[in-house]
Figure 1: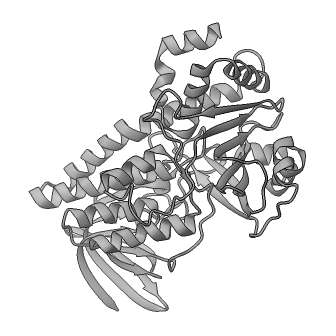
Figure 2: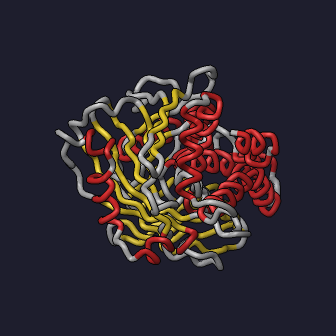
Figure 3: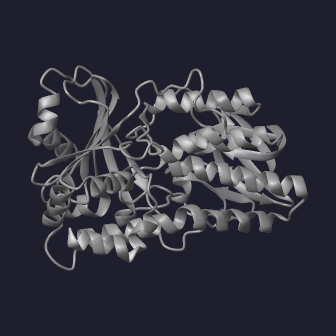
Length: 413
């Protein structure tokens, strides 16, 4: 068995892991990044690189930069209500600091971000499938294999960035973060030759199918990632296969039908699960710090997870680097990371989950009628429209839901 000893082993080279590796390399930490896939590789996702992700790239000095793969910037968002009315919002209007971000296929974005981590000095073992993460005196042992050859890494800390599907982790921690109402299943495919899409993220709600929604996320002036997502428990209750919901979205939504007049699917229709956090789910386990989907950091309202994955990767790397540099006990490093996560991420996700629950089972009216009314009012109220758009793209904190003045304005509207 080949063995290696490092200060930090980052398991998973997606946005969370690559961000952590970038930050560790910047701070001079001896770190190894491992992933079971060979890069570049595809990843089922909506591909939205939103404002939160862009801010992390700015802190890493990677944005703006030559070679950044986001050549087609977004200018706003379109929201389609259940009654087929569409709200179009220019996100930057009246607020030059607000950005809608980019849509970058994960094969390109993840490959580019991993390349930057390697350029900064991170070491990479791609093609290593991790099977176990076990406690050892003064650290952890990460065991796996590469092309049938057993490998073992001993590290003082490990950062878990393995996404929704973990390998067998030899700790009292679940391999799957969510399921049922704690997970969304989604399908997507790529379509070129589209007409009239423009630089807008599009989210469309079908009547009677909320909390699910369909999306059209443009990857260029005439191409898009088109998909459909539905919470797992609602999908099982409704008994309608996700593929049928996706095909119904393509055929019944008037906006999508118009885009697809001359467009054809050029990629396989692929699906994936997006896990959400369960209450009181830990984000650390001793010297193991969990990030991104491994910690359930996707937003329940939008399903977006790249921004929080990168933010958590950055915070995990900083906490570990501080502990190594100043000889801080491991338990204090774990506590510092957990505190940062709850302050910066978990609190917002909890509020988003609460708001989703209220929208699904409103105390008055129906979900469809409430969304119809909100979209209709926002069409004539620019301030309300911008706030709604920024909430959806993750550029406005979910703590806005706690401000009584905002609820008063919405009630008056």
